Length: 358
Image (cartoon, rainbow, N blue to C red; front, side, top):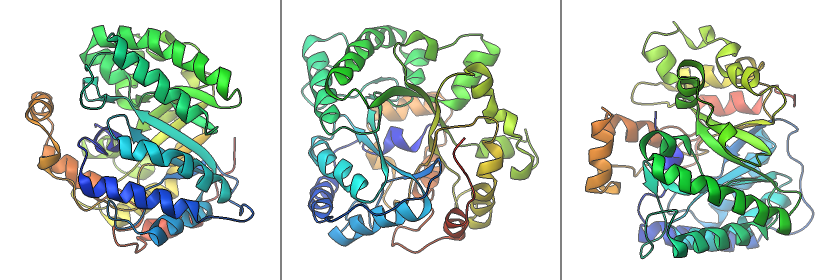
């Protein structure tokens, strides 16, 4: 399944830009001593209520709620979105004030191609595109986040655009050295779509993460509804820890992060299924021993539809046999709270989750 992060800012919608500006202002209001967060690998992707038209109070509430259920907060910044880029310093500061570890992820690709802002060549081999990428990485590093993902689901590029993948490999090492020089304590890495990684590693015997250096952690995105829907396991309770534990078996000494985890409450899923999945997270990830497990969306996003896709993106997804309407339906229903701020049953399971650090 293509992840939520892949689409979270496919196009620069004016109202979303305004929301990001409001978010930056809201986070600047967070003052005083940091509050405490839970000591757990579990955390949340920072999506406030009413997104993308969130108010200042929505943003403040989202950080406070994040600290109630988890120990870190994640923000996926899509490279083409310059408005959200300007909000990152306030975001990282707000996470600290809430007592949360900060996790900034760069959506540097969109499906099968680089995703720079308009006006830049969509190639990691282009000089100006490379310069922009490295400058943006440096700017984020100056906020001193605890964790940085330099590109989300980079194995999609390995699978569908090998030439651009090779260009990014060289750029990654430069980016890592840049961050080392600015913020040595920031842990750097990449995320990989787990189902594709599993196929590459277990079936094709291709180890994509090993193609990058340095990696302080290896991150994976996983949306395991398909394991039940396709009949691989009879129920959520039957998904064994060893499925995600394959990452630990492959990389016994590495920091493992699950940077996007989710189960929808609509379309094929239900609120009850989502709650059951949340209850099973400590068990399902027990053998993987992850440092972080990030729920992909705090609040539902009520606006995803086909208008976010251009003709090229639509053709690409259809060529893969993706049910686009079902995909967006999943994205709109992945939150543990609905788009208006009301908790779903799974939220209360997250509040009560016993999931200590490895």
